[in-house]
Amino acid sequence: MFTLYYARDTCALASHIALEEAGADFALHRIDFATAEQTAAPYRAINPGARVPALVTPQGILTETPAILVYIAQCFPAAGLAPLDDPFAFARMQAFNSYLCATLHVAHAHRMRGYRWADDAAAIMVGACYDLIENHLF
Image 1 (tube, rainbow, N blue to C red):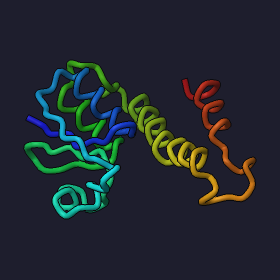
Image 2 (image 1 turned 180 degrees about the vertical axis):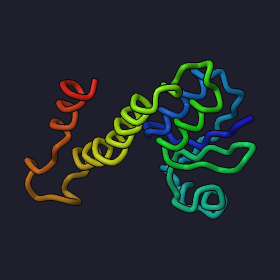
Image 3 (image 1 turned 45 degrees about the vertical axis):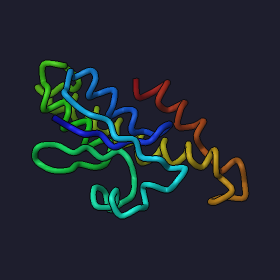
Image 4 (image 1 turned 180 degrees about the horizontal axis):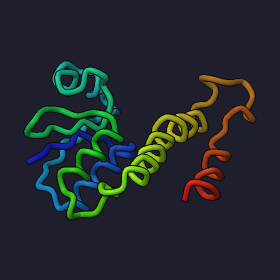
């Protein structure tokens, strides 16, 4: 059995979807960002980075969406969540997941809170990220 720690309206949804699609036996534990529960000691004992998602597995705790998605795909190969038998296709999938996490996610945050990082609205590149995904990565 797994436990997925998540917060509403976050990228933890990807891990939740993967667990559902895999048919995994799992429980959900919602972290309330409105009360800063992610910074409290009980959750920091699970994820010292104070972020979601975190997945408690029989082997230990995993954090970061790309790692969790690969773990789920490998634990449930029959679900067909990843091309596990094709190293190149698997690497391309990992490149896409990494782009989503390291580039699109950051640009999306900038779109909503760009004033934290830039004075020029044109410097916020979320539209270019969506264009790249739509026209080149699919």
